[in-house]
Image (cartoon, rainbow, N blue to C red; front, side, top):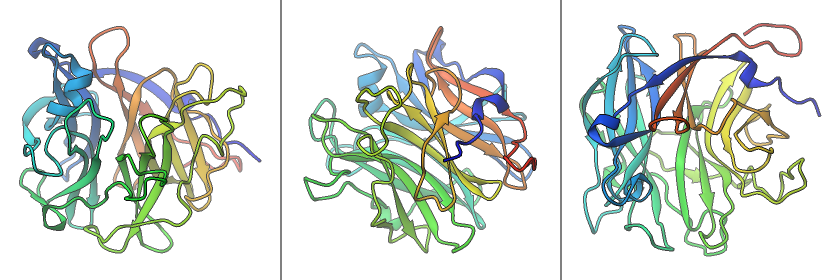
Length: 324
């Protein structure tokens, strides 16, 4: 099997964005998009540090914010709170995290992860929700305010415990919508897998694919020979006629960092190579008007405050020598 070219060879670091350490908050998952005027809008998770620290507060107090800049590397102006938990009794009661922003036809679609129960509990109960907007300012809840995708009811299912980290794209052949996501069966035996759901309308109904899980640590054997937890934070797009995926690596490579896959159909992913260097999380892409990725946004949580970080992406070169 021919392995893809290393993705990290295309990256030029530009620097950190959205340092909120002065207000005792951290930034997680920066999802960018350009508007028609060329401004860069970033939707991100803001988490107060507090006495319990960001890791617990991420699941109980995380909320989605909106920031704008003239260029990808900033500086950014934080505009407004987009969404926060509705409180006990709702499926999106607590942390509202992991925003993913896309343009779909004439509207904007903002996918997110929501926690139904407070943390820590064995039953995490995470769902994927969707907001829709015409202008990146005013939002409405899709699907009648209900989640568009939830954990499987079957206790033996690979995604019974939780689902999160949605990555949206449109199949260029069939025109169907796809939503790639992470799932685990149980937090007691945590193995992170990647699956996909499909739909003909943005609000659903979304159907989990019969080939799920697409990527499972028991099926994708690590070259180190060691057991590993899996991968998470999938980011899927089309480039050069291929499906591409960046994801966080949790032990496939040594040391772990990220993985990069290519696929002919977005279902059979083969073997990965290393993605971007280092332990950064939640890869998200900014695209130009032709649908080509121009910048990579990640979480930077080493050697300083927890912020976003931006890389410029150079044009890719595929094995036939064609530049994309």
